[in-house]
Image (cartoon, rainbow, N blue to C red; front, side, top):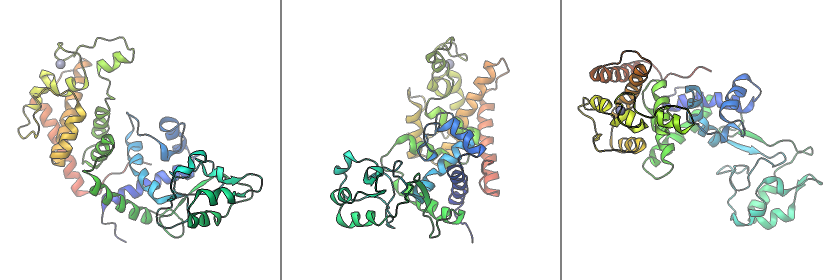
Length: 344
Ligand SMILES: [Zn+2]
């Protein structure tokens, strides 16, 4: 079959890696990623973190495919939240629709199972759920040895994870994202989805994300973490080196930005917040402008690091050209090839 939507195909391939990590937690990749990014929970509840590797970034972006394409199979019910998780064998939402209030004393599915009889507590189930839902729950078979709960794939009837079935789940997610793009929601989540969708080198995407969560080793950030260092900007030697100062408002950075003739926002207005600039660009500008914005930010940062390590710096025009070349080269390569995937 043909996979016409490359972004959905890419997500499906990444979701395959995430599925392997979920179902084979003792593999080396699973153990390595878990130790670094989700030591205290499973992969589906992991956070992106402020300095993710490109591999983790990409896999993280595909987790929504797993969240949408899986549901719990009840074992002992200890891992399954009654109202938050998908665990019912009904084909629409797989979630409980009975009014949520009565569940406060019974948050997990395990509270509905009698450990002595190893069967549902019929009285409790009938009291808590609407009759048709109680009926569905009482028909869910339980194993006598009450094993651990397990996530199962519901993207196809056989319950086997396949790239093809994950592709269709991904298409649905991408459609919903487009519909919900302008709606409210977590602005950070909107930003990282946007960054992930840009045609930029992995290192620039990672840099951009770190900038958006203020996770770059600016001197003021280092000092706040207790590192003995001067906070003064090493380029102009005038102001403390914050994120916005280093990337935007330092005189040297401004001399680079001023060369970007079609810059869609006025960077001379004293801005305090890098994220606000990004959100402004996300809502009002083309993807190409956003790519150029991040590439210039990266090049300014690259130049700052060169200078900090006593190497020769670049001229403002060279910095702008570097950024433009990186955007153009990547766009050109992208138009010839399928999107690159991180190595497994
Ligand atoms: Zn400065």
